[in-house]
Amino acid sequence: MKATILSGLMVLAMPALAFSKDKCADAMDQATMNECANVAFKKSDSQLNELYKKIETRLSDNTDTKKLLAQAQRAWIKFRDAECDFQRSASAGGSVMPMIISMCMDGMTQSRIKDLQNYLNCKEGDMSCPVPSAN
Image (cartoon, rainbow, N blue to C red):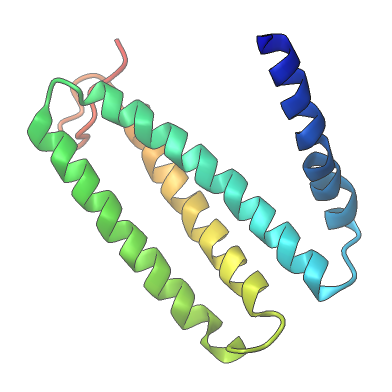
């Protein structure tokens, strides 16, 4: 039963994968470019969420630091959203606006991904790093 469900989900996911690989490379219309930028952002957002969960796991024994992580992430999201609102202001109401927003969100998310990856790769004893090493 699980194999059937998994196979069904794979079949449903195939058009999205094909869309992102084939159409995005040769996107010529704004609607496709908007969708491709959104697909890229969603992929980055998923990667960010995975890294965040890994850090939460490493901080499971330190409730105070885990709360600070959540606070920092909420503040970062507010900043990201405000920055992307600012960046899209020149295209407000235009057909390019969704692409500008998605590209901004993706770029900001990629930057945050690098930050979280750095936290996960701290050397043992690095006092400037709030995340314990993996041991």
